[in-house]
Length: 356
Image 1 (spheres, rainbow, N blue to C red):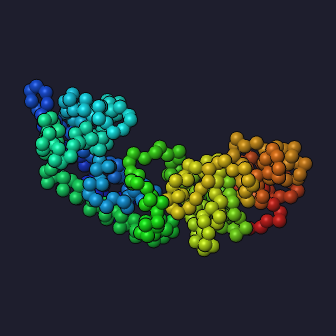
Image 2 (image 1 turned 90 degrees about the vertical axis):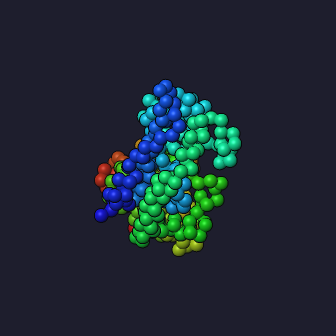
Image 3 (image 1 turned 60 degrees about the vertical axis):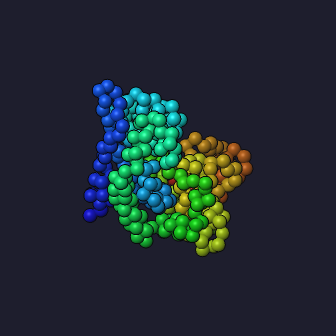
């Protein structure tokens, strides 16, 4: 039986196991530096891939050494000179503090404090700690530490490729296989640390009934633009799938096939680009076929009543933000030119000359 994050229980235990490493000596009396290495970020990456997130990042792990980007170091017993070296030569901007940072740091940050070229430490290795660390890194144990875990990563990659029922996942894999993924053209791969998310992919704040309505609207051939103030992962992914399918069938760009934007649309814009789709940011003055009224957005009742249309009230000047459908989280009343439909606490105002 596989773990929900694409790992078996045995594989999960392997990634959660801490490896104790000793090198050099410090202090009085003389004793070894002692650190522990864990691979918990690989568990997080597998969990993300299970929900079809961070796929490029996972599939780009082609070398055993790539896994070191996902290793973490716990300082069990190190001397003050080691801590000083970490502080002075750290790769990240954040100052490392073994107390405030939970006695844990990225492996690359730790190793950077010792790093010198393979030849340099042999000829210039006057620092005993640097010499000891590089001697440890040259030992065969790293083949076992990295090799066994890399074999598991390759299995996880195969399991991801086997998910044929996920259209966007397979589309992204196809872009990678053809060398057409947007990240293929970057100077280096984006791996940990990742940017802080604006929303949790596991949460679905948009009611299921409203999600079904929005997806049905997106599939309608006369709907070409939508603006939504949501950060719901599942909703945006479903909408991008409609966008990509239409883009492929119509032979046009994703944005031409179905313009997706809104007040919170940029929350998943980078992920949408990885999937092969496109989400625009919030700054868009044009009208949309479907406009979901954000809670902060102005709605002017006098204008709406005068025009007999809730859609007209959604903008201070001009015909309003919505051409065909306006959706609000409150009851705006009844209007002559629209049908009003209640849906799980939301109200859909559909132009009477539009059917879906």
